[in-house]
Image (cartoon, rainbow, N blue to C red; front, side, top):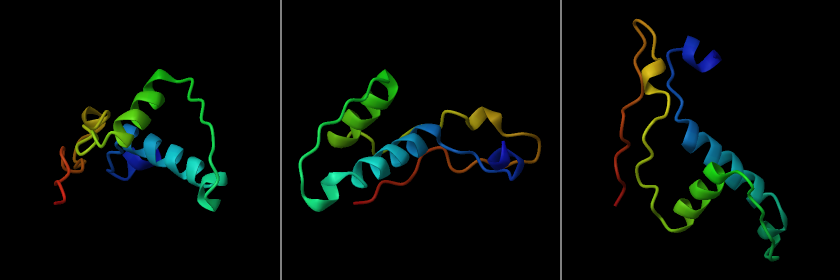
Length: 82
C-alpha cells in the first residue's frame, strides 16, 4: 500500500525473487558450503528455477493495473543488459 500511495508500481515477482535470493545467500552458501533448499510454493519454486536457467530477463509487472489516477508505473519491460 505504501508503494502505491507513492505512485510506485512494484514488480511482485522481482521483489519476491530478490527476497528469496537474499535469504539463500545469507545461508551457508556464502561461506562456500553446500545447502539444500526446499521451496514448497509453486510460484516461488518456478521463479527460482527460471532465475537459475537465466529465463528472467523480463519479468512482467503483476500489479501494473493498480496505478491510481495520476500515478505513473515504472516501465513495463526493463531494458536488457548486454
